[in-house]
Amino acid sequence: GENVGLHLPTLSVQEGDNSIINCAYSNSASDYFIWYKQESGKGPQFIIDIRSNMDKRQGQRVTVLLNKTVKHLSLQIAATQPGDSAVYFCFAGGTSYGKLTFGQGTILTVHP
Amino acid sequence: GAVVSQHPSWVICKSGTSVKIECRSLDFQATTMFWYRQFPKQSLMLMATSNEGSKATYEQGVEKDKFLINHASLTLSTLTVTSAHPEDSSFYICSASNGLNQPQHFGDGTRLSIL
Image: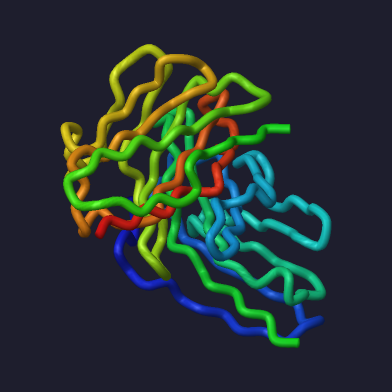
């Protein structure tokens, strides 16, 4: 997978601020994208997904933006809370190659 | 819905022991299951992909004789770490999916410590 073995980048924010986590993918054939949240000592949890026929999708306090032109995906978290502290991973997949490829994760730390 | 159960959650054993980890999809049929390995503060590394009833597909650099994967049913896959050594100590995570372009649902991982 991409970026295997590299230490993860970090993002620190204050409670109540908005957070933006970015992800770049390499395969232009990717047409399905997912953001996962991984808390310490646990497996990743599904947050939100988006397909390539959309450029924006909103959930509860989260928004995913997709820019296929530059192969970029972002996750916006509104009014970030301490419970949002975790590692966030993006996944990119596609029907043409049938396997999800995870992007580099980001460690989000929310300070009270 | 879409719950994946992984067992055990924590294993400590002596060098040379073989360890089996189970991954079960509790409320859906998983046509495909994935096994990952993760070191502290690092990303997940895909080890292998298994489809029910067929042999697993291993990623480059992953020894298939070392990490035996069995996916005998649509709800159960097992990973056996054979003759485990301290360098095999890691966090092993499974995930399950019921379709090509469907989310993977992850188990809570197994922390393996080899003494």
